[in-house]
Image 1 (cartoon, rainbow, N blue to C red):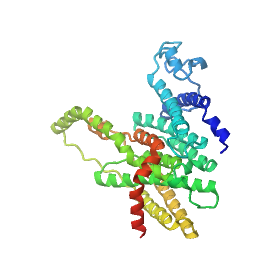
Image 2 (cartoon, rainbow, N blue to C red):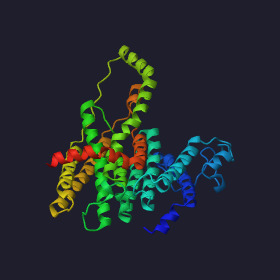
Image 3 (spheres, helix red, strand yellow):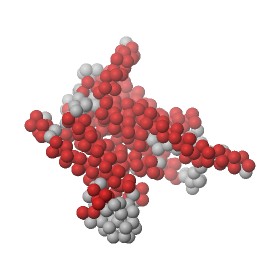
Image 4 (tube, one colour):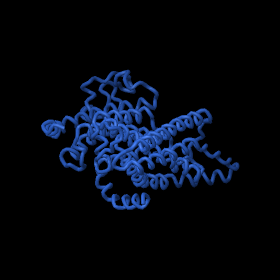
Length: 393
């Protein structure tokens, strides 16, 4: 990349611009957070007060500033606006500006000081913010948000191979196709496959062990977007780090609902015997296709080495095809669950304690990995290489 352009992109003027742009993106995310679960268009109608339906003028719709100018109320009817609107805008602006500082000023990650890398990472971060808030509220992840992030990762990798180089081992792309852009696109697909595959395997084994759905299907789509934007190594790191973010919330939720759960349990013991819940259906097709995909991808990596031959390339394609089949099985599984879904019973305190929204914690882990992936990979590198040599030898 031209050094003059990179120097300009690293200037404080551009940094302030991205702070302002991030605030505006946060305003749009608020629209998505409210309207997507309600089944409304995110384009029409224009922003309006939910109490009096009055149109909000542009000068009353300035991110963060308007909230304080209007003291958090509608200019026309005085109805209060939720402070969360302002907090989402502020958080998005700080993420856009903070990651610009980390990449272009602090040089926290090798290869990340590239406009394409930064823009793809911010597209992912914005999608994770919106998805995390929706998931926290409704315990649901919308594929429209995750699909947009995955599309940004695939298109960004094709346009700027540096997107995948930043997350690749030693920051070098394998020669898969003879064309660097296509190599980056293939690695983006591999990252999406690995991210979703980790969730699919965990869902199946967790459901089998606990007779309760271990993770939602939406988490698979979310991890596919993370892997597609950041690469397969980052997907593994995110998946391993996310439980540490979710654990404090899970403990707090358990402690918060314990008295109510105990009261409910005592009431059930005095009343009629509770009917045993039907265990959730297991997606055998998804699980088998995912395992086959992982096996083929590992075989391709093991036989590829420095120079990829025809056999290794075909094995890689077969692995991606198996992972694609696992997505089709997953969609089929979702459709069957939706068709067989009975009216939801009232949510008890015990159920609320067990139901932890995982999307926000995957997002937090992804944000951390964006910043420290190099350090994490270097920390685990000796052990991973030793295991690889043992397996190969």
